[in-house]
Image (cartoon, rainbow, N blue to C red; front, top):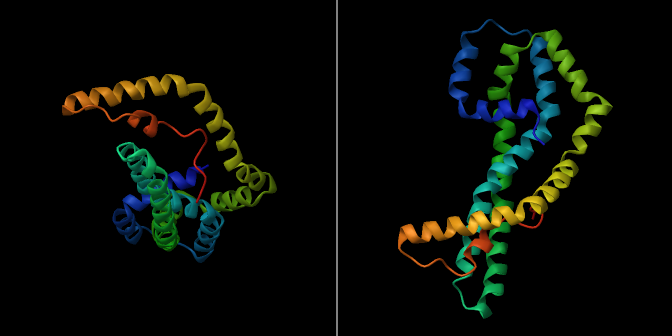
Length: 201
């Protein structure tokens, strides 16, 4: 579950050059404030790493979904073996790409998120942010993020599967008609949401 500061991180990564230029023209930042910002970034590092992992995995997940549709075109006796090979390829990609994106995100945080915090928070406010992030109650709440996402995700999928599958099949048929091709058998079911949130490889 991404915290508000991490939503700012995504924006900051997109506008890093503008933020850096603005930081250079602003008033000098005290050493005490810089230390507080560094502490906030350190406390936010697990969230930044989770965001980076999500960014690294997203294209692979989309590719895997597309491959699921393509598998339906293969002879039935080959599907399982090819599916295993593709899943192994995706895991390998994630294992190789995630550290690259994660390490770069952590390295970029001080020059992207850091200037935003320095500009928009006073020292006193940063002290309050640090106290909040370090509080046992906040740590307990954040530790429940994955559990809360799974709880609502499983229930949401179960409650909406029937309605979504009907719409997905209709969309698949509409797209196929526009392309002048017959929809592949089972393509819609291959693209439907999983029965539960995807587990990390």
